[in-house]
Structures are given as C-alpha cells and as structure tokens.
Length: 235
Ligand SMILES: Nc1ncnc2c1ncn2[C@@H]1O[C@H](COP(=O)(O)OP(=O)(O)OP(=O)(O)O)[C@@H](O)[C@H]1O
Image: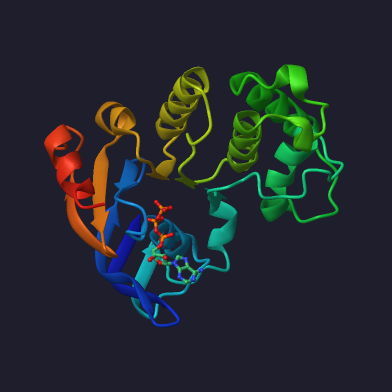
C-alpha cells in the first residue's frame, strides 16, 4: 500500500530524512512519533508527494506516479489555521472544497454531496456552525472543519499531521472514533502525534523517529511508556 525504499530528503544543506525504509498496509492506522525536528512532518510530506525525495523511492498503491494518486489521498497539514481568517467562506463551503480534487472546480454539487456534507458536519459536531464564516470559529473547530474537508472525498489514504493539537479531549475522542470508522471502510491512515494514549489505544503500527531516521517500528502492544521516554530523551 505505502512503501518507502531508501528514501533521503534534504532542505538545502540540512538532512531531514535519512535512509527511510517503511511499509504500511491497507487499512492500517500508522502513527509517527518523535521529538521536535525529528523529521515527522517531512516524512508525511514525502508520502503525500509534496516533497520529492533526493534519492530512494516512494510507492503508493503499487505506483510511483502521483498524477492519478492525488484523488485518492487527503492530507490535513499542521497549522490549518494559517489561512486568511477574514476570507468569506462558510464551514459547509470549506468542507465541500474537499471534492475539488475529484470533480474539478466548476462542477455543481449533487444531492448526494449535500447529504454527505451534512453527515460529516453531524459526525464532527459542526452542524450548528455550518453557515458560520470559517475564520470566526475556534482553532479546534477549524481543525475539525479541515478534517471534514479531508474526509468528504472518501480518500483511500488519509494523512494527518498532529490533528489533536489545540483541540479539547471531547473533540479528540470524536476524532479517534471517526478514524476508527474510516479504517472500517478500508482507509489507510497515517498520523503524526505526540499523544501516547492515542498510540496505545488506536495504532496498528508505531513509527518512532529521531534525527531524520527511523529508530524502530513496532505495534501498539510493543510500544511502552519506557520506549516513549527513550525516544524523547535528550529532546
Ligand atoms: N522548510 C524548511 N527549510 C529548512 N529546514 C527545514 C524546513 N522544514 C523543516 N526543516 C528542518 O528539517 C528537520 C525536520 O523537520 P520536521 O518539521 O520534519 O520535524 P518534525 O519532527 O515534524 O518536528 P515538529 O514536531 O516540531 O513538528 C528539522 O531540523 C527542521 O528544522
């Protein structure tokens, strides 16, 4: 499903990923952990095709060519709130934007699209604010809107970079239930997080990074608090 073979990536003269070898299977929930600057965001950007590796190969859905793959991938980046907060777009309109990669810009939405957006609003507890301007919501609500935008296209691969930062524990629980639902639909999920509880309760695979390298890959049962401390030691 996702395979990285000897992947290296550099920013100018800074090595950000070194010899990354990794496999993630279909409908797995893989979590990437590691201290600040260890290369987690760079890794998900490489998986999405936003950054091209300096060397090595990324194979998604058994293909190396990203042109057709974009329709199958949804990415919720870190810092979703870095958009123009005055931009006049509603919550519902923002979620519908998630269909652009599949449909193009100038297509009308169907009845099914409108039904789906209502279901997503309901799932994310956003129905009451659906007509509000996006920039007038709290950071946590905005985060949920961008997750809704990522989900509406029914991606086969969903990538989230620290989705729980700035959201309260109720929304966090909501998010994890939603991810489990997505998994049941065979969606593969890759999530960067520092949340040890999420790792223990929900992850199928834990990818531990340090200094641009993968220290270890294990399952949730093998991932102990001790291991977590070891990864973060000297951070
Ligand atoms: N645009 C950039 N230009 C130059 N260096 C960068 C850039 N983005 C990241 N880096 C560097 O690459 C390394 C990996 O950064 P990355 O953002 O992938 O780490 P991270 O593990 O996601 O960190 P955090 O937990 O703080 O989000 C760091 O040393 C960082 O300073």
